Length: 277
Length: 277
Image (cartoon, rainbow over all chains, first blue to last red; front, side, top):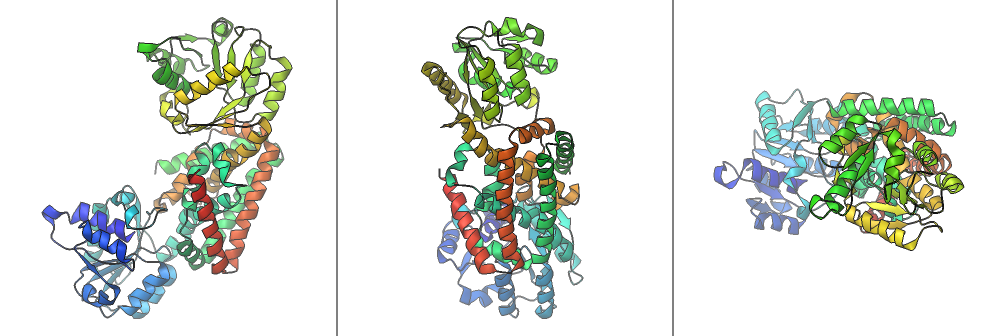
C-alpha cells in the first residue's frame, strides 16, 4: 500500500514537471525501497534508524503499516515529527487506535484519522499500482483537534490520488460498517475456500467462485490482526450473516420456491439500489 | 444467454465473410428477437408457433431456457427436430434433466449434455456479449448415446466461441461440483446483501463487498428454480460452508490469533493453488 501511495503521489501530484515537493520513504524491506528509488517513484530512501531525520523534514506523512505496528511507530517517533506536520495512517480499525493516539500525540502534530477503502491481494512493490485507488472510497473521521485547513488539504490530496468519494464518519461507526463491508467479506471468502473439497474445483468454476474468493489470497498476519482488533463488531456481523444464510437455507429445505423467489427478488433490488448510490 | 451465444456464433464462427451456415432464433421476447435480426446477429427470427418449421432446418440447436422450460420445449418439439440434429441446452442442473430426456428423445437426435460456466447478472439482448465466454469452462457430460463426431464438433464449436477449457464430467458429479462453485456462491452473495443494514453501506465499501455481491443482482425466478432442482447437493454444500465459517468465528471468539493466522495462511495457499490450475 505504501508503494501504491508513492506511485499515485508521483504520477498524480508530484510528477516531475510540476513537482513542488519530494517523496521520502522508509520500508523495512530494503529491496522494495531500492526499487522505488531506482524507478524515481521516491526521491529519497531512508533506513528505519534514520526515521527521525526523515520525519523532521516531512510536512505530510502517510503511515502504511499494520494497526499495532503503526501505533508502535507513532509512539516511538512522536518526538520526531516536524512541528505542524499532518500525519495519517491507513489501518483498518480505528476506535482503540484513536484512543491510544490521543494519549501521546503532540498538539502541534495534526493526526487525521482516515481509512482508504482500497487494496489488493498482492503484496510488495512489484504489485504496487496507482490505479487501485481509482473510483474508491476514502473514509475520514475528523477529530476535534483537526485543523480545518489540514482536513481540506487532506481531502484535496485524496481526490487527486484518484479516490472518488470521501465518506465522513466516526471511529465507532467506521469500525461497525467496516466489519461488514470488509472484514466479514474476508471471513466469508476464507471460509468458502476452506470448504472447497480440493483445489481442482475451479475446473467447474464460472466466475462466481473466483470473484467471491479473490480476497481469500489473504495476508494472514494482517487480517488475523484486523479480525481480532474489531472482534465485537465482526462477530455481530457474522451472526447477522448467519441468520440471513439460514433464512435462505430454510427456504431450500422447505422447497418453498415462492418465498425463495420473493427473497431473492428483494436481494436483487437491494443490490441494484447499492450500485446506484 | 441465447443472445450471447448468437453474438459469439456470428462473430467467431459464422461471420459474414466466411459464413457456411445460418443462425435461426426463437425468443418469447419479440423485441429481443427483432433487435438481433436488425443487427444481423441472426439470419432469421421465428415466432414460437413456427418452431417446428425452424427446427426442421437446424443441424445444431442451442436451447437457452430455464431448466423446467427447456425440458418442456424438448418434450413439445421432440418430433420436430431434423433427423441427425445435434441438440444441447445450457441449464445448470443435470441429473434429473438427463433422466427425463432419456424417456422421450428420438434415437436419431443426438443430445449433448453440457453446461457453459459463463453468464452475467444482466439480462436481455441489450446486455448480450460474446466476450462473457472468453476464458471460461464448459462442462460436458458425454452420454453413451452420443456420437463421437458430434462430441468432437461440439467441442470445436465451444473452443471457437471463446471457452478455454472443457471439463468432462457426469451429471451426478456436475451437480455436486456446481452446487459449490455456482449455487452456494449465489446463496452466500444473496445472504450477504440481505444482511446489509441499508443500501448506503457501500459508502464504506472498498471493492470486497462489491465483488462478493455482484451476482446478488440475481435472476430470482431462475435461481430459485436452480436451488430447488439441486436441493440435496446444495444443502450439503451450505452445511460444509457453515462449518468452515464457524471454525473462523470460533477462532475470533477465542481471540486465538495464532490458529486464526494459521487457518488464513492455509486458505491463502489453497486459493493461490486454485489460480494456478
